[in-house]
Image (cartoon, rainbow, N blue to C red; front, side):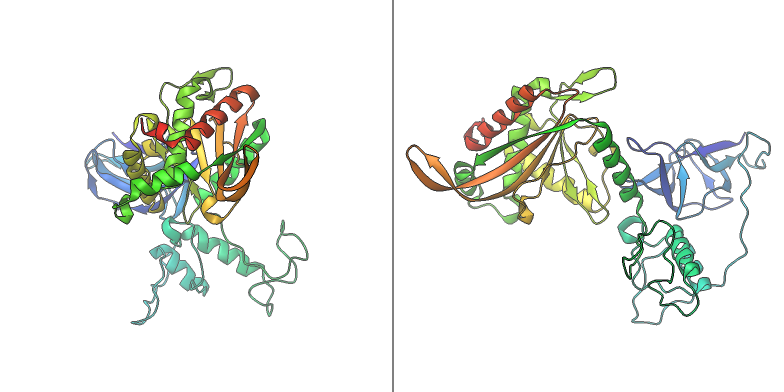
Length: 404
C-alpha cells in the first residue's frame, strides 16, 4: 500500500517550508527513520525522516521549491507496486526537459553556493550568480531565487540597464532610482508576517527604567578574573538572570495569552534574541531562574552558536514565556521592542553609559543602562508590569542577590 509523505509543521506558526535538498531519489529503498530530505523552515535547517519503509515512487516537490504544511511531497510504495492514481492520490508532476549541463567554473574562480537546479536554470537563462544572495540556508541560491531573477530580467526592456527599467514593476514606489530586488528568505517572510500581526493585534504599552551598573560591573570583573575568553560572564548573562528572578518574584507576569484564557507558566523560560544572517532567532534558556550564572552563560553561548549556524532544534526555540532583546552592544541607548506572541512581555535593553545621577545632595557619574518593557495589556496590567521592572532593577543594582 502506498504511503504519502506530507510536510509536517516543524515549528510554531509554520505554514510552508523549502525542500532544500532531497537525500533520496526515485526508486531508492528507504527504511523507517531514514532521513529523506533537508527542510528549511523559518528558524533552521531540519531533517525529515521517513515514517515507514518502502520505495520512493514519486517526489512531488523539486529541490529548492516551497511546499505547504500538509502537502503531499513524496510517495512511498511497496516493491512491485505502482503509485496509485485517482482524486485522493497526488497529481503526477510534469518533468521538464533536461536543461543543458551547467559548465563548471575554471579552477581558481569563485564557486557559487547554489543548488544544481539553480545553476542549470541560471545557465539556460544566461544569468550570472556572482552577486546574488540566495534565500536558502546560509545564503544558498535555490530555484525560487533564479525564478525571481528571470522575472526581473524579463521585465527590463531591451537596451535598458540591468539594474533598473523604464517602468518600475508593479508595487515598486515610483522615483526611488536604481535598486536591487532582494528576494525574501523563508525566515524573513515569516518574521515580517509575525511582527506585523503582533503590532496590529497585540495592545502594547511600554514601561522604562534606568538601572545603575557600577556594582554589577565590579562583580563581573571579579568573577571573570582568571577566566579564559570563552568562559567570561557577560552583562547580558546578568540581564537574563535578573529577568528570570524577577518573573519568579512576580509569577503573575509569567503568562501567555491564549485567546479566551491566560496560561500561567510553571517554569521561567527566557527567549533571547540572537541576530543571524537570515534574521532574528530567539533560542530559549529553560529554567533560567534555577541556573547558576556560569551555567546560564555557557548555555546561552551554545544556543547562540547553533542559532547562527542554523542548527537549532525545535525544542530550543519553540515556547518561552518572556523575551529579551539587547542592542546595547551596538550603542543603542533605548528602544521599544515588538512582543513575541503569545508571550506577554519583552525587555529591550540599551547600552550602559556614564550619566550623572543623584547621590544624596551630590551629583556623580555612574554607569547607567536604560531598559524598556513591552507589555501585552490583555494579560498583564500596568501595575503588574511595573512590579516586574522594579524586581529586575533590584537584581541588576544588587547583583550579589542573583548569585544566591
